[in-house]
Length: 184
Image (cartoon, rainbow, N blue to C red):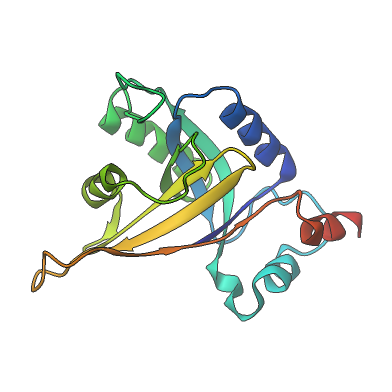
């Protein structure tokens, strides 16, 4: 899954939030296939096509960010929501306002973009989008990157199979390709 903030101001606020602490932070991204808050005159459809080519439908727009406090005993190394269900319900209400769906995220301050074994267990139990697949995002701070992971777990016929995952691309408003669109 490929991600782009729907506007540069939201990306900048998120960047400041990620850089404001050395602890892991987490929550949910409200994402859509079409942006609500596109800030420039250039067509977002043309931007998607220019960035993604024939796979333009695989680019998702981040409309909002919902943070959940980190209640972990070791916050520099793991993220744990204060009340997972309550935090997710609040995020779902925000997503509903944006006609969006939720994507869980948390940061890896050590800049490791690969999911840890704990991340995979967490995704398998709490981030499933359908029976054998889970989606979540790992954020690395320097430079800011959002790594959208899609994990396919073993099937009922082969539950011990190793999970297979795909990792998408993050497009920043600081990229040369997007700066070009902002000037037009």
